[in-house]
Amino acid sequence: MNTIKVSVKDRLATITLDKGKSNALGRELITELDDMLKNIAADDNIGGVILTGKAPFFSAGLDLVELYGYNEAEAKSFFQLFFNFTANLVSFKKPMVAAISGHSPAGGCVIALACDARVMAEGQYIIGLNEVPVGIIVPNSIFQLYSFWIGKGEATRSLLTGKLFSPEEALKVGLVDELVKNESLLTAAERKIKKFMEQESNTWSQSKLNIREELIAAMTADQSATLEKMLAQWWSPNTRHILETILANLQRK
Image 1 (cartoon, one colour):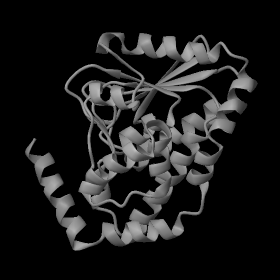
Image 2 (cartoon, one colour):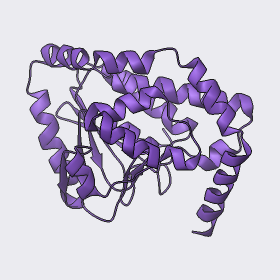
Image 3 (cartoon, one colour):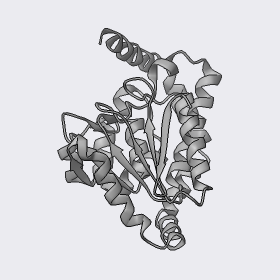
């Protein structure tokens, strides 16, 4: 595996995103993480998962450098992959906690939202969904995921302005559940997930799936029409100009 690291201790798997500095979500990372979670879901020797990254990032979101170079077929297949991946994350039956090790905008936030709890490191970090300012149309499934945790009103306001929260703001609106110092991040995540893992596993899993029934339905619904609108906007001159500006800024850093 080139983009993730996995360790298992006491039936708990810790998956560390490990792609460069920012853990940007390209095709390889998404595929490797999706495959690993499918394997863990089928492994009776593993009872839960912690997802984490490396400070100062959890994940910077979609790999815009990679995506910008895609042709139309490649872009379509990537977004289909991402839709399927997020649906699998949301319907993952075992406990999963995000140990958010730093910045977590856009796709990084989506991964964290799919988890059952979120512990975030204190610091000058950002988290939230800022797709609209980037020129990416937000599908209903992602709105449903956001509003599942922070409510429809806050999700609507935040999505349409592309608001990125500080850790303290994220805690206040319920986007994250706990803030800790970075050196205590994994310990806090382990403490939280073990409370889930102590429960009778089938009862816990089925209850989770029942609670998420409407959310899972939204994530697994046919999104072909939405995807076509997203792709049309992706190739529009306005969005390409925004992406070019973002990439130019990245290259200067």
